[in-house]
Length: 250
Image (tube, rainbow, N blue to C red):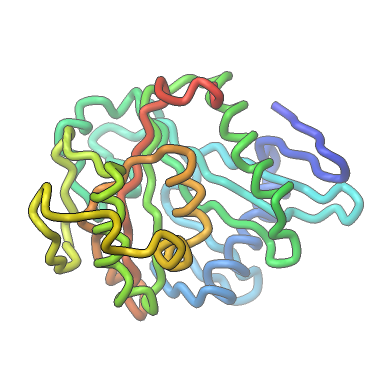
């Protein structure tokens, strides 16, 4: 699976060298830039971001062919590859409810990141083009993942959650619940008006990835989970796509 666009090559990482490149990129973005100090394996000399799930995943890689440099990556974990009795990465923080019976039909997305020097529309769209190409080759019924907001977004989480509820961008059908819930005080259904919150102000409070998922039609669980593995803690919104609703992707 390869897509070429200008100087960029998008492909699945196949060799140890290619995987090392994307682990290094993840470290630069998540550890050094965003200062996420979680449970990932830290190696002082090689400074890679890795965890126990990586060996079961396919890793999308975007390479600048002119510089021979990995500039973007996206991790895909097919439910059919999960070891017996194991769950998805996101199940550490969320109970999947009724969705837990569909693991073999689920693709979990994670570790999406782009090198700071390459954060442009072309590279961002290429990541999602890669997801679309992957789904054509390996169809799944559901996409899941965590959309993480940093510690300094704590005061914005209530507004974001209310906005998602008011715009019918939440999923309650599967009964998915956070295991370490962030305390929210949301209005009862029917009491909230979208007009109460300025659209542009909310958009500014969302992360780039969260905004992209929202625009692509994702559903979220309105109650985020607190991820205390990071110092300071970060806040995860469970994110869900039903792929049959998005024919342009598949």
